[in-house]
Image (cartoon, rainbow over all chains, first blue to last red; front, side, top):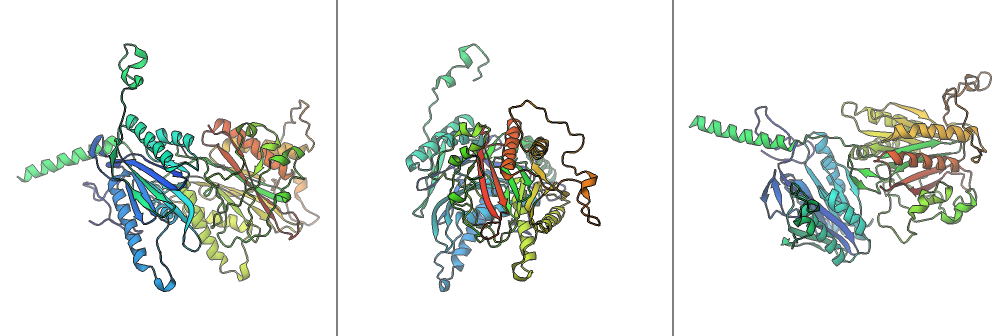
Amino acid sequence: MSLSLQAGGSATRALPSAAGTTHTTSPITTGTSVLAVKYRSGVLLAADTLVSYGSMAKFKNARRLLPINSRTLIGGSGEYSDLQSVSDLLKRNALEDKCTADSLYEEENNEECAKEVWSYLRAVMYNRRSKMNPLWNDIVVAGFKQNDDGTTSDEPFLGVVDKIGTAYEDDVLATGFGGYIALPLMREKYRPDMEEGEARALLEDCLRILFYRDCRALNRVQIAKVTREGKVLVSEPYELDTFWDFKGFVDTKAGLGTDGGW
Amino acid sequence: MNKNIFTSSSLILLVFSNLVESSAQKFDPYQLNGGLVAAVAGKDYVLIASDTRLTDGGYGINSRRYLSGRIWGASSSSWEPISTLASTQLPQSSSPSAASASWNVSPAKWESDGSLAMPLEEENGPKRNEHESRSLSFPWLHFIHPPSEAPKNSPVFIGSAGCASDCESLKRRFRLELDSLECNFPSGLKLGVQSIANLLQQVLYGRRGFPFYSFCVVAGMDNRDSDGSTGAVYVYDAIGSFERVAVGCSGTGRELLQPILDRLFSESSRNENHNHDECDIPVAAHRDVMSVPAGEQRLGVAGSLRPPVKSFVDCSWEEAVTNIARGYQSVAEREISVGDEIVICLLKSESDVNNSPTLHVISFNLKKD
């Protein structure tokens, strides 16, 4: 069984079914939120490392922040297998770009910039949704824009594509549950001239809050950055310290003898 | 043994299908991402407007500055400057004197493909004042970026709202069709607004079986008239039905906006010196406010017939901009997927130095909640 993301690809991940091929119309193994914010010298991404199988915490060290080429990062939530195949596809493209860069035309760097990757992903996702065979992901793409001559520009890029091909850019982004809990906090705290430390503290605070409130989240997280100097760095997974002794966590509602709800 | 395998595999099947069903998510290829686009055709101008809120189809706001799939130039071909607007050329003289202080100029922000995009990181420009934006007089209008580059020919704009991914795909599909048509024309001849309107109908209807959830308006200058060009606006449904109107809107909240605009524009054209101090209830219209009486339809002795509805409004562009602003503010009060900001592209066919149309982009704040 082959898996093809290309237009015209026919194979799909089939569920065992008597009626032959069935398309993925709901996710099985899922990662939760990805958070992203622009800061003074680039873009910062954050995600936890949990992949859930329904309500079971299945994989606790799964990496969802992935460098695609030397200047582009993606972070994916949703179906993890789909994310892996998207990553394979993009890395295949990046390798092809690298191998076909033509020194005769002084192409030192033939790599796609983040905006190109984002735009390409939009087309892939839209194509698949139009075949009613979606890639069940929200994918954040981060990097830098490109000048007309192909050199990397100073302007950071941050965009997201969802499973039906909706694509938009913004200064702060959050997918999944983070869209409800983290995004308002990030919008409030965001400034274009944030230092890396500030931006990282913001993302870690948001991840911690997500861990408190999102049942599919974990406190083992990764942070990744793309910087103006053209560096793509993804941290090793590390654990956030948590604090469970907040009064609101300890005491039941209003201190009354209620059913124990918060 | 065989039976064992059968039972265990069917057990797995059962578990699997349970898991699939328990997540209870069915794939829906559509999402209504909100957005309300409107356009007004005037005698010597046309304007197109959109809000910039992108919702997730429910209560979530994906982005507050989404525009590239909402208002776009019909063609992606060369966008060469016809006139660079300096701040002194902004219509300060024609606008109320109180307003001139709050017009702001910032660098053009056309994407290279001819779509309009909001500058994401706010540059050093003045921080917008929320209080200022709530008053109902002219001053809260301000320029964000009169583009330094504008298309060579009179441009045609398309506004689309609905499913954002469909709108984006429609934009690309439409430009592909248009560019492949125009590249066969001699010496850069461009399609007029009515041809663009027809082409959009064909592109939309081409997906009749699996429609683009894109609710569109088209706005451009109609150059066919002998006495100069007039504004032309067309409004569509998702599968390509369309008609030419004077004032049209499309997208989420169009049911709220359309009657408000109809009313506002019929009043501005009927009563030029409307006195707001008097408590006068406007005369009830006994017929469609946009209709043209039969006696006024005939042109000359053996002339052709005018359409039975008005194809442009009589008011000035300042009034049109104000009416649009008031309309959007009203809708934003009651429709959660409309808000954040409104951007207006105003195309004026004024006979300036080059005798070419000028393009202005205006924005102001709406409710953010």
